[in-house]
Length: 79
Image 1 (cartoon, rainbow, N blue to C red):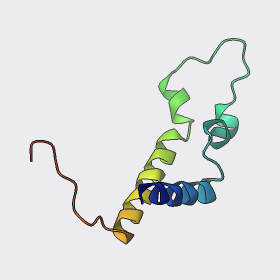
Image 2 (cartoon, helix red, strand yellow):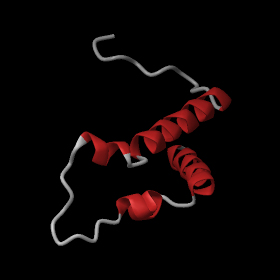
Image 3 (cartoon, helix red, strand yellow):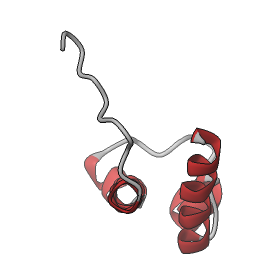
Image 4 (cartoon, rainbow, N blue to C red):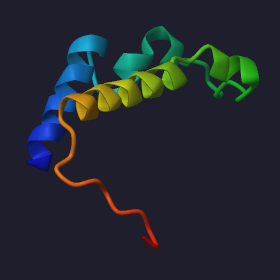
């Protein structure tokens, strides 16, 4: 079922990354204890692991789909 597939994917990510929670995934990079938030500059975003984590989640989904091909391919809009 869809729920089982989701649980398997979530479990893979959690085992690999240690968490599903942003604050835990960000670690020290996500802690901003200043009274005012840091400016959102390119350097600020470059220090955060978010793009790498999203890419890894996409890779896990791609791997899962290769292991469990859909019974019928999804229909594209207008198709």
